[in-house]
Length: 289
Image (cartoon, rainbow, N blue to C red):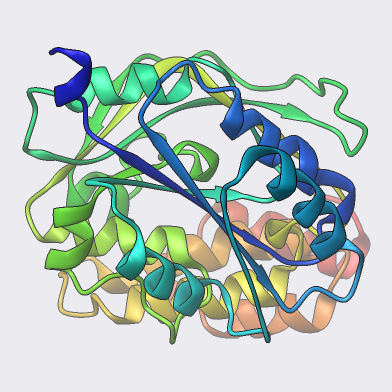
């Protein structure tokens, strides 16, 4: 494919109170080896000095930057995608870092595979200071369909690496503002529409672990994951999928949020109790298991 035929990639960074990290995130986009990139940054009502930091970089690099009152990530993404020009869309965390070859690798992979609605890759974790944490397994490339995502039959697609075909996003109506855990919902919607997710073995991004990561908010995760699954309650395995998730979260929060743990336990039908259920109960009662 000649350079003038290469698709435009619209990278969208919705920034919210990530002042210590936003500059590294933006600069990692500007450093991409792939030449056809537009960057759109939206500050979604930050109360720290994110806006001043972003404006200083905008003066140098000239990317699109807008400031708004807080609307939430899904609404911000939908509105920004509507004015983005790219046929490929990369929502990107304002605390994460793209590796330089990320977009080039993904665009090349998507070039002749129209059945793939989302391309993703591997990540490595870093701490708040940007130092490597390790712990990730090297996984082979894999293709996911709806059943793979809904039933967790294969390892999922890391959020910091998602690259969407615009046509796939538009076909399913974009991101859902009613569910605040955007990635799982959009992956299920797009795969149910018949597209695949291809997850490459290449490491494409650095995921920053810090005190305000969403996955650490167990109540937020439980509420939004179960609300997401409820949109697919017509699936024959719906009850099993919900029970499996409750069991996993019961084990995670049994020591740190016993009230939530008891709520989760009450929501698991006895027929779906397993070793995780029993270990979670032991942790709640005795702090071990």
